Length: 259
Image (tube, rainbow, N blue to C red):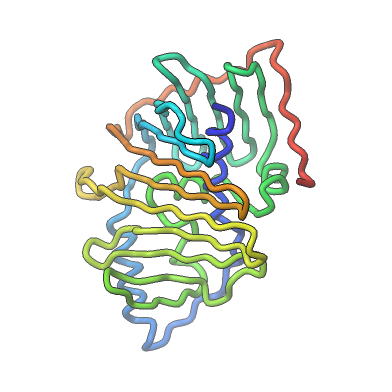
Protein backbone atom coordinates (compact mmCIF):
# COMPACT_ATOMS: atom_id res chain seq x y z
CA UNK A 1 0.00 0.00 0.00
CA UNK A 2 2.81 2.41 0.84
CA UNK A 3 4.45 1.66 -2.51
CA UNK A 4 1.21 2.57 -4.26
CA UNK A 5 1.24 5.96 -2.53
CA UNK A 6 4.82 6.44 -3.72
CA UNK A 7 3.75 5.65 -7.28
CA UNK A 8 0.88 8.17 -7.14
CA UNK A 9 3.39 10.80 -6.04
CA UNK A 10 5.90 9.52 -8.57
CA UNK A 11 3.63 10.46 -11.46
CA UNK A 12 4.53 14.02 -10.60
CA UNK A 13 7.95 13.25 -12.10
CA UNK A 14 6.43 14.54 -15.30
CA UNK A 15 6.42 17.97 -13.72
CA UNK A 16 10.18 18.51 -13.91
CA UNK A 17 10.52 22.22 -13.26
CA UNK A 18 10.33 24.14 -16.53
CA UNK A 19 11.48 27.73 -16.55
CA UNK A 20 8.99 30.17 -18.03
CA UNK A 21 10.06 32.01 -21.16
CA UNK A 22 8.67 35.24 -22.51
CA UNK A 23 6.10 34.63 -25.26
CA UNK A 24 6.38 36.20 -28.70
CA UNK A 25 3.81 36.46 -31.48
CA UNK A 26 4.66 35.50 -35.05
CA UNK A 27 2.63 34.30 -38.01
CA UNK A 28 3.79 30.72 -37.49
CA UNK A 29 2.33 30.74 -33.96
CA UNK A 30 -1.26 31.27 -35.13
CA UNK A 31 -2.23 27.58 -35.37
CA UNK A 32 -0.46 26.85 -32.09
CA UNK A 33 -2.36 29.65 -30.38
CA UNK A 34 -5.65 28.28 -31.69
CA UNK A 35 -4.78 24.80 -30.42
CA UNK A 36 -3.92 26.15 -26.98
CA UNK A 37 -7.10 28.25 -26.85
CA UNK A 38 -9.29 25.27 -27.77
CA UNK A 39 -7.41 23.06 -25.33
CA UNK A 40 -8.08 25.33 -22.35
CA UNK A 41 -11.63 26.12 -23.45
CA UNK A 42 -12.28 22.39 -23.10
CA UNK A 43 -10.45 22.04 -19.76
CA UNK A 44 -12.41 20.97 -16.70
CA UNK A 45 -13.32 23.93 -14.49
CA UNK A 46 -14.07 23.32 -10.81
CA UNK A 47 -13.61 24.62 -7.29
CA UNK A 48 -13.73 21.19 -5.67
CA UNK A 49 -13.51 17.66 -7.07
CA UNK A 50 -14.54 14.40 -5.40
CA UNK A 51 -13.71 11.26 -7.38
CA UNK A 52 -13.87 7.56 -6.67
CA UNK A 53 -11.46 5.37 -8.58
CA UNK A 54 -10.23 1.80 -8.88
CA UNK A 55 -6.51 1.24 -9.15
CA UNK A 56 -4.65 -1.75 -10.54
CA UNK A 57 -0.94 -2.00 -9.85
CA UNK A 58 1.59 -4.30 -11.49
CA UNK A 59 5.36 -4.63 -11.25
CA UNK A 60 7.95 -7.29 -12.03
CA UNK A 61 6.63 -9.37 -9.13
CA UNK A 62 3.16 -9.48 -10.65
CA UNK A 63 -0.23 -7.85 -10.18
CA UNK A 64 -1.45 -6.58 -6.82
CA UNK A 65 -5.03 -6.60 -5.48
CA UNK A 66 -7.27 -3.84 -6.83
CA UNK A 67 -7.33 -0.79 -4.56
CA UNK A 68 -10.12 1.75 -4.22
CA UNK A 69 -8.77 5.29 -4.21
CA UNK A 70 -10.79 8.38 -3.34
CA UNK A 71 -9.36 11.61 -4.73
CA UNK A 72 -10.58 14.92 -3.36
CA UNK A 73 -9.24 18.26 -4.54
CA UNK A 74 -9.85 21.76 -3.29
CA UNK A 75 -8.38 23.53 -6.27
CA UNK A 76 -5.00 25.15 -5.67
CA UNK A 77 -5.23 24.37 -1.94
CA UNK A 78 -5.38 20.66 -1.07
CA UNK A 79 -5.26 17.17 -2.57
CA UNK A 80 -6.56 14.36 -0.34
CA UNK A 81 -6.10 10.68 -1.18
CA UNK A 82 -7.59 7.70 0.65
CA UNK A 83 -6.66 4.18 -0.45
CA UNK A 84 -8.66 1.21 0.78
CA UNK A 85 -8.54 -2.53 0.21
CA UNK A 86 -11.63 -4.71 0.61
CA UNK A 87 -13.45 -1.83 2.25
CA UNK A 88 -10.75 -1.05 4.84
CA UNK A 89 -8.73 2.16 4.70
CA UNK A 90 -5.07 1.30 4.24
CA UNK A 91 -3.35 4.60 3.48
CA UNK A 92 -4.20 8.27 3.44
CA UNK A 93 -2.39 11.32 2.08
CA UNK A 94 -2.84 15.07 2.35
CA UNK A 95 -0.93 17.27 -0.07
CA UNK A 96 -0.81 21.06 -0.02
CA UNK A 97 1.43 23.53 -1.86
CA UNK A 98 3.71 23.44 1.19
CA UNK A 99 3.51 19.88 2.53
CA UNK A 100 3.31 16.21 1.59
CA UNK A 101 1.95 13.94 4.33
CA UNK A 102 0.70 10.37 4.36
CA UNK A 103 0.37 7.40 6.65
CA UNK A 104 0.18 3.67 6.07
CA UNK A 105 -2.11 1.73 8.42
CA UNK A 106 -0.87 -1.65 7.23
CA UNK A 107 2.71 -0.96 8.32
CA UNK A 108 2.04 1.64 11.04
CA UNK A 109 4.26 4.20 9.32
CA UNK A 110 3.95 7.83 8.26
CA UNK A 111 5.71 10.50 6.21
CA UNK A 112 5.60 14.23 6.95
CA UNK A 113 7.65 16.39 4.61
CA UNK A 114 7.54 18.91 1.82
CA UNK A 115 8.04 19.07 -1.93
CA UNK A 116 11.66 20.14 -1.55
CA UNK A 117 12.55 16.93 0.25
CA UNK A 118 10.41 14.82 -2.07
CA UNK A 119 11.99 16.46 -5.12
CA UNK A 120 15.43 15.52 -3.79
CA UNK A 121 14.26 11.95 -3.21
CA UNK A 122 12.79 11.63 -6.70
CA UNK A 123 15.63 13.49 -8.36
CA UNK A 124 13.44 16.10 -10.10
CA UNK A 125 11.59 19.28 -9.20
CA UNK A 126 7.87 18.88 -8.56
CA UNK A 127 5.17 21.07 -7.14
CA UNK A 128 1.57 20.88 -6.00
CA UNK A 129 0.04 22.61 -9.00
CA UNK A 130 1.70 20.32 -11.53
CA UNK A 131 0.45 17.24 -9.68
CA UNK A 132 -3.04 18.76 -9.56
CA UNK A 133 -3.05 19.32 -13.32
CA UNK A 134 -1.75 15.84 -14.00
CA UNK A 135 -4.52 14.18 -11.97
CA UNK A 136 -7.22 16.17 -13.78
CA UNK A 137 -6.06 15.43 -17.31
CA UNK A 138 -4.11 18.59 -18.03
CA UNK A 139 -0.53 18.97 -19.21
CA UNK A 140 1.70 19.53 -16.20
CA UNK A 141 3.06 22.69 -17.81
CA UNK A 142 0.70 25.55 -18.55
CA UNK A 143 0.95 25.80 -22.34
CA UNK A 144 -0.11 29.44 -22.20
CA UNK A 145 3.25 30.22 -20.63
CA UNK A 146 6.61 29.72 -22.30
CA UNK A 147 7.48 28.57 -25.81
CA UNK A 148 6.60 25.20 -27.32
CA UNK A 149 7.06 23.31 -30.57
CA UNK A 150 3.96 21.72 -32.14
CA UNK A 151 4.53 18.74 -34.43
CA UNK A 152 1.51 17.35 -36.27
CA UNK A 153 0.82 13.62 -35.92
CA UNK A 154 -1.88 11.29 -37.26
CA UNK A 155 -4.18 11.95 -34.31
CA UNK A 156 -3.17 15.41 -33.14
CA UNK A 157 -0.03 17.24 -32.06
CA UNK A 158 3.12 16.36 -30.19
CA UNK A 159 4.00 19.33 -28.00
CA UNK A 160 7.50 19.87 -26.60
CA UNK A 161 9.23 22.78 -24.87
CA UNK A 162 11.40 24.66 -27.38
CA UNK A 163 14.14 24.51 -24.79
CA UNK A 164 14.21 21.10 -23.17
CA UNK A 165 15.62 20.55 -19.71
CA UNK A 166 19.15 19.30 -19.25
CA UNK A 167 17.97 16.41 -17.07
CA UNK A 168 14.91 15.26 -19.02
CA UNK A 169 12.95 15.45 -22.27
CA UNK A 170 9.23 16.22 -22.01
CA UNK A 171 6.53 15.35 -24.56
CA UNK A 172 2.78 16.03 -24.55
CA UNK A 173 0.26 14.53 -26.96
CA UNK A 174 -2.91 16.53 -27.69
CA UNK A 175 -5.78 15.24 -29.85
CA UNK A 176 -7.18 17.66 -32.41
CA UNK A 177 -10.57 15.93 -32.59
CA UNK A 178 -11.65 17.17 -29.16
CA UNK A 179 -8.53 19.02 -27.93
CA UNK A 180 -7.72 16.77 -24.95
CA UNK A 181 -4.55 15.30 -23.51
CA UNK A 182 -3.62 11.94 -25.01
CA UNK A 183 -0.28 11.36 -23.34
CA UNK A 184 2.44 12.88 -21.20
CA UNK A 185 5.93 11.45 -21.39
CA UNK A 186 9.24 12.13 -19.70
CA UNK A 187 12.60 10.65 -20.67
CA UNK A 188 15.60 11.10 -18.40
CA UNK A 189 18.51 12.20 -20.58
CA UNK A 190 20.90 9.93 -18.67
CA UNK A 191 18.84 6.94 -19.81
CA UNK A 192 17.89 5.98 -16.26
CA UNK A 193 14.16 6.35 -16.50
CA UNK A 194 11.01 7.02 -18.48
CA UNK A 195 7.49 7.83 -17.41
CA UNK A 196 4.42 7.54 -19.64
CA UNK A 197 0.93 8.69 -18.71
CA UNK A 198 -1.80 7.86 -21.21
CA UNK A 199 -5.30 9.34 -20.89
CA UNK A 200 -8.43 7.75 -22.35
CA UNK A 201 -12.13 6.95 -22.03
CA UNK A 202 -13.10 10.62 -22.14
CA UNK A 203 -16.63 11.36 -20.97
CA UNK A 204 -18.73 14.48 -20.84
CA UNK A 205 -18.98 16.35 -17.53
CA UNK A 206 -21.28 19.26 -18.21
CA UNK A 207 -19.85 21.07 -21.22
CA UNK A 208 -16.34 19.68 -20.65
CA UNK A 209 -14.68 16.31 -21.18
CA UNK A 210 -12.67 14.38 -18.61
CA UNK A 211 -10.43 11.28 -18.89
CA UNK A 212 -11.94 8.44 -16.89
CA UNK A 213 -8.86 6.31 -17.55
CA UNK A 214 -5.19 6.96 -16.71
CA UNK A 215 -2.48 4.44 -17.53
CA UNK A 216 0.85 5.22 -15.87
CA UNK A 217 3.99 3.31 -16.84
CA UNK A 218 7.22 4.02 -14.92
CA UNK A 219 10.57 2.48 -15.85
CA UNK A 220 13.71 3.35 -13.91
CA UNK A 221 15.97 1.22 -16.09
CA UNK A 222 15.88 -1.70 -13.67
CA UNK A 223 12.23 -2.08 -12.75
CA UNK A 224 8.98 -1.34 -14.52
CA UNK A 225 5.73 -0.49 -12.74
CA UNK A 226 2.26 0.11 -14.15
CA UNK A 227 -0.65 1.86 -12.45
CA UNK A 228 -4.08 1.91 -14.08
CA UNK A 229 -6.58 4.39 -12.64
CA UNK A 230 -10.24 4.04 -13.60
CA UNK A 231 -12.55 6.83 -12.46
CA UNK A 232 -15.98 5.51 -11.43
CA UNK A 233 -17.78 8.76 -10.65
CA UNK A 234 -16.89 12.42 -10.17
CA UNK A 235 -18.69 15.16 -8.26
CA UNK A 236 -17.78 18.80 -8.80
CA UNK A 237 -18.15 21.88 -6.61
CA UNK A 238 -19.72 20.15 -3.63
CA UNK A 239 -18.53 20.26 -0.05
CA UNK A 240 -15.51 17.99 0.42
CA UNK A 241 -14.21 16.61 3.71
CA UNK A 242 -10.50 15.91 4.06
CA UNK A 243 -9.98 14.35 7.50
CA UNK A 244 -6.32 13.74 8.21
CA UNK A 245 -4.52 12.98 11.45
CA UNK A 246 -1.37 10.89 11.78
CA UNK A 247 -2.05 8.18 14.38
CA UNK A 248 0.11 8.20 17.48
CA UNK A 249 2.76 5.54 17.81
CA UNK A 250 3.47 5.28 14.08
CA UNK A 251 7.08 5.08 12.86
CA UNK A 252 8.26 7.99 10.73
CA UNK A 253 9.42 7.07 7.24
CA UNK A 254 12.90 8.49 6.70
CA UNK A 255 13.57 8.96 3.02
CA UNK A 256 17.22 9.14 2.00
CA UNK A 257 17.38 12.19 -0.28
CA UNK A 258 20.73 11.05 -1.63
CA UNK A 259 19.33 7.89 -3.16
